[in-house]
Length: 215
Length: 107
Picture: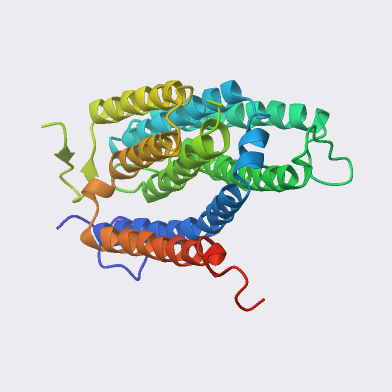
């Protein structure tokens, strides 16, 4: 039996149990996140069915190209995150730093593109409220669409922003040499979170941008 | 094979080739869903878009999130979570979508 690594917390039998408990805890947290986003997707579904014509019309005001580019951007960030996890598992410290930084930067590109999109929509007076101006007869249900759009993409962007904060902390800890092939659970579970945020976008993208562009 | 177990722990290390393969598949699926969206399939557009999204989510969960190599307990919790999400969607929609059937009743 190998010497007990000093990264082992006292409540665990061995490193394997600690690793599984950490990753399991993150999965349980992600289930609560599924419920959180599930409620938003449910509201969106109900109103899209209720005001089908208005929602189709309103969704055409979104920028499909930027939405698609952002989907590709986020998939790239998930890929670099898997490479960060792989680097941590195999003890490649420099690559770990590189891929954590790359993942953060790609996350920043996503938020930048989202910011450009929101700016356009703000300029077009599509933010629900007193200044909301919508051409045509669908003004009220379109207001509902844009409320859900800004809320859902907003909380998604917030999650991504938090993920970048987590990666920033891990970047510093990696720099200090805290992770090794024996201990890298924080990298692994930050990866789980990052991929989950990616998955949420994989559903936001078709539902908000795509399903009515053929009109 | 491309999947190896490290000696010190039972942790599965997924090879970079698998990650790369999944990454390419995700890009192809994204371009497909974008292309298909411009073809008029009627109600089929929603179905195809959602089917591709579910496929992509499965790829991310199984490989990027290592669900495929995770303990059964993780599968049970994930499955349980999705089941409850199913209850949330099914019961709420069964209310909203059938309200028209009872037009006038109770009003």
